Image 1: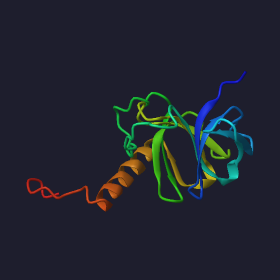
Image 2: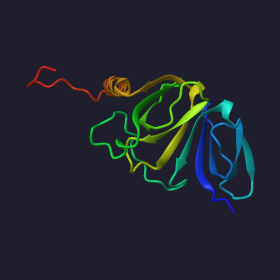
Image 3: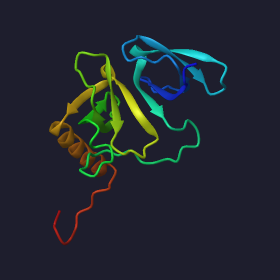
Image 4: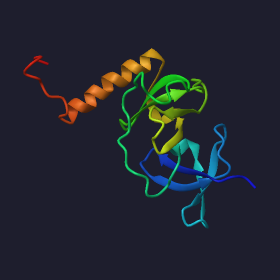
Length: 163
C-alpha cells in the first residue's frame, strides 16, 4: 500500500485543499486529495494551482513567519540552487531547488528554513510572475524583503547612521 502524503493545495484563486495524496506526480495534469475527514476525495487540476505544499502537519502546526530572504546560514542551503518565486498575487517564496527547468509545468523547492512546516513545495510555473535562480534569486529576495519590510513600516531611520 502506498503511503499517504500530507498536502495543502493552494489554488490560484486562493482556495486551499487540505488532506493527503497518493497519486501526485509533477508531470500529470491532475491528482486526488483525500480530505481531512478521510472519506471524501477531490480531484485537483494542476492548471488551477499556484503550488502544492507537502507538509509535516495539516492541523495545529505552530505558526512561523515564512522566511523571505536567503542567508548563508540557511539550514537547507546545501540542498540545491537558491530560488526566489514571486506569484501573480504578490506572495514571495524563497528556498532551494535541484529541479528547476523552465520548460516544465512546475518544479520542487525546499523552504530556506528546514524547521518550516513545509517539507517541500511544488510550484506551478504558470502561477509565478517571476522566478529567479542562483545569485539573481538572492538579490531578488533581498530587494523584495526590503520592500516588504518598508511597506509594513518595519524599516526605521536610525539617528546614529542616518539610514
